[in-house]
Amino acid sequence: MITKQEVEKLAKLSKLRFTDEELESFTREMTEIIEFADTINRNVGDLTSEPEGERVMEMEQLRDDEVKPSYPNEDILSNAENSNGFFVVRRNCTK
Image (cartoon, rainbow, N blue to C red; front, side, top):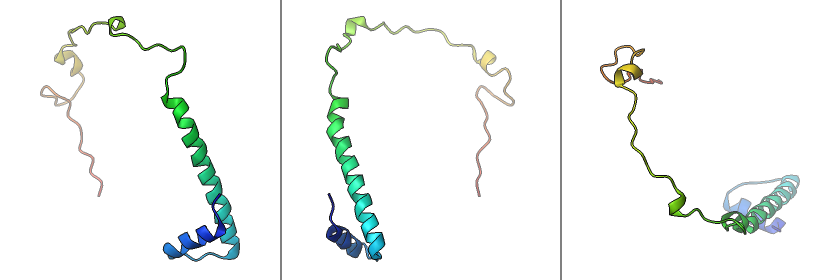
């Protein structure tokens, strides 16, 4: 839990001024944020560790890469205007 004094110190370092009500509110909110971050930190290990019973796929189980022919450029570009062998796109000008 973060204390009111710690929030006051952070406010002073940040050159911020808070009313007493704002200070109480920030103390409560920062405590909630830190507790939430702690909850995430505690549970990250569960996400990164391998679940029990799961097995890693072996290399033998993966399929071989196969080179396959692509569509002919003429077919791909048949509806493109001013193609010259590639797609022509308009430049995005934002001024």
